[in-house]
Image 1 (cartoon, rainbow, N blue to C red):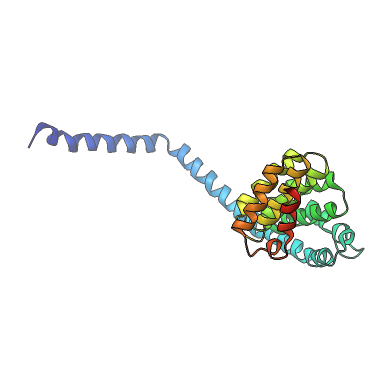
Image 2 (cartoon, rainbow, N blue to C red):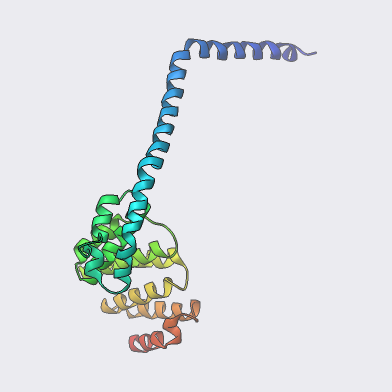
Length: 223
């Protein structure tokens, strides 16, 4: 056996001894840290179970009528309630830390946009937190259009292009690209607009915008 092999067990024993000594010397500190972590976990679980979940349930119930009003085109009632049921503005403000409350922010922003209150719509749409390929990107698209209405076209284009690329699906992307193309036309950027119209035709040939001939009309107009 080599000298190195003989020394290895001794060095390992020494290391183990040092570890044990550290634990013994810092027992109170380690126990305190572990206890603090346990208390934080328990507090989080308690908050989620007994506060957040009940609030989310309440917000979900309140959202039912608000969403029905939105889908029926009753945007004022969807936003501010009907005298009996809460509107999305109040739901977002009161339950904004819940999933349902977060969704209420999107609906509130969309209702405000429908009423051409773009500045306030931006506040609610900006506050919405989502990253899925459909809802979150549609909200971002709406946010971009709100910025366009306030005169910030460059920010609008940036947001809507990001929504188009993040979504990468027929339900969202063609509509985003169409709106950006229209903004490019307004800026006199005809080549960029044509490129986006042609991209829609190439990548989303079964999209309703293509099937109804809208993109061809826009393309011919741009050229």
